[in-house]
Length: 88
Image (cartoon, rainbow, N blue to C red; front, side, top):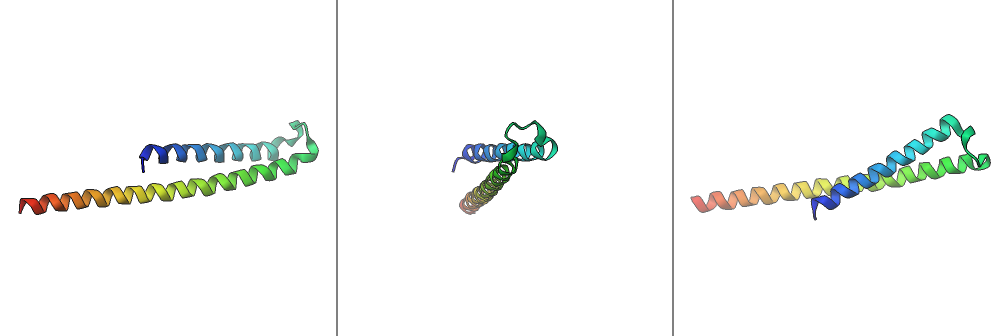
């Protein structure tokens, strides 16, 4: 898997988490400025759910990233072993 894909997905879900966290903080600190007062809690809950989804996806991307790094390290070690075996 291309490392750029993983890095881009990581950035994408981190930004979604940041956006949802900002929205929740905004609702908690100054809900008065929001036009639809009756839906403040619903909007807060939506932001919370968006944060959770983004965090879950971010964590999955982190797991994929760790797997790719392990795979690349294993390939590197395998190539080093083959090269040192060829010398002997």
